[in-house]
Image (cartoon, rainbow, N blue to C red; front, side):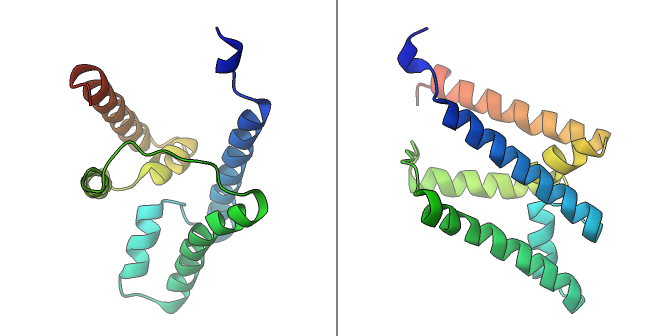
Length: 147
């Protein structure tokens, strides 16, 4: 292993901090509000007609998601990110994720973070399915198709 291949400790700590924040937020939402922090379900409920109190917490959650990168940028600055995909590919990927969340009755946050932690076998099956599909897709596009 080349010494330049080793990540600095700050990368590990930022990953740990991010995981702790996501886990804590999900735990607090279920403990204080009785709701699962599944983003697709939260946004879906926000777009449906319903009681005003239900919409307010959903709106605050989404606003927090949207505000977080701006707060992070102000405090730490943004890292350089390279996306090796064009606009069309990103649109298609987003649509496929949206369709997948409907078929799976939830998204990665709902199943992967909240469902598995609650011991849901359905969430475990959904998470294994979308993770496997992701691994196979990356392998095929990079190593078989050479894209």
